[in-house]
Length: 253
Image (cartoon, rainbow, N blue to C red; front, side, top):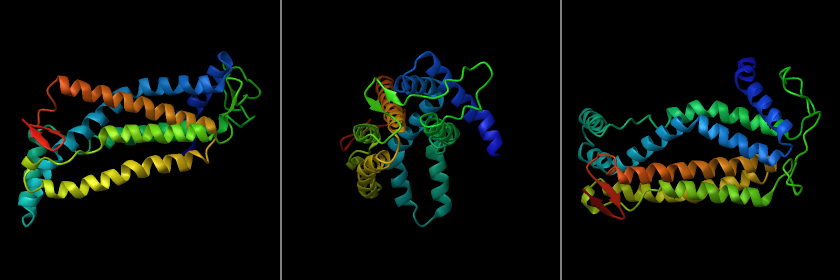
């Protein structure tokens, strides 16, 4: 399995990293270009994941109402839940599957950046990729991306907060029924995650090489921008077609 992972993912990404560095000998610019390339390649999967997650979030008040109504009848609860999913064309696994597909790529890129910033072993290079002998971790003549970088770690945390903010659940609409009571608890949990994940990102970023923190920041920022595009397009198209949109405590039909 490890050999397969290296052959299919790690080696091509490492060779791409070195090939770009051979053309543009600035590791910060190379990381930026790699981030753009990967985001473009994975755009369809990320788009599906964002849409599925937003659709499921918008449907949550109705799901909670059904759960409250049929709490003593698990069979009816399952049937009504599936009916809502089918009626509103929501796939509960739609936000998870694309992320699971992307996970091996992100792991491979993590190891590529970790090794690429510190290694002198270029034995996995393809014959047509020139061997640079070593990679200078200094970007723009100022930043050493092979060591931890506090500003980049903080920037990654801020980007994580902004991205999470676009998906944070708003106050449940009073017209959503009794299920909205449970939404208050879920909203509180989401708010805790909204602050915990950026904090965790900064904490981890402090311990990573600056190049990895830079990639984390750029990747998160681009994902947040993609979310904004998806949401704005959804508003122009009249929402998700689920019969209402939640806007600051009001169910708009």
